[in-house]
Amino acid sequence: MRLFTSIIILSSFLLIYQGCGTIMQGTTQQVGISSSPTNANVTINGQDYGSTPMILDLKRKDSHMVRIQLDGYEPYETNITRKTSGWVWGNIVFGGLIGLAVDAAAGGMYKLTPEQIEAELRAPLTNSVIGDDGLFIAVVLNPKPSWERIDSLRSNE
Image 1 (cartoon, rainbow, N blue to C red):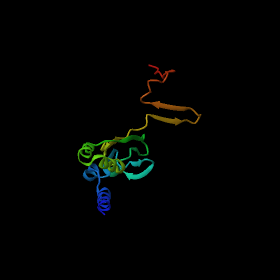
Image 2: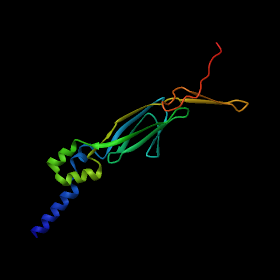
Image 3: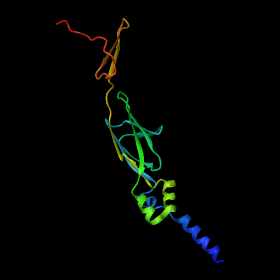
Image 4: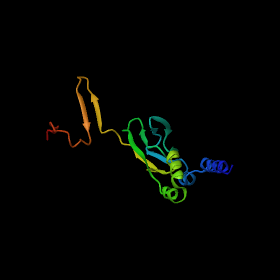
């Protein structure tokens, strides 16, 4: 009977116990997303989340791919990555392997970085015009260093 009681108490403790990181910081983290100009569409991991500015609760246990886009501007892409949080040390000291396992499974042992995304949306680097005779003109403001120069327009001065 004593062994049975001990097993019940231990099982209850394991089911109720959560890791230190999960208790202290939770399984989600708020991430702020803004853009200039504002009102840009935000997509995270392929799912639409609305327009900037916004604050989202993202799961700590996953990394996230963020895409911010607005018509007339080049899209902005970045990653939000997970890193090990300092609360892991609390688990090692106080919770042992059980608390560490709970935090790893729930995501409480991670911290998302960056915590704030400020996207500066840029106008496209090229503009094009198609004339009546089918002539295609492209204006490049910032050529890539790997491009080969073929010729340039010269003035008649």
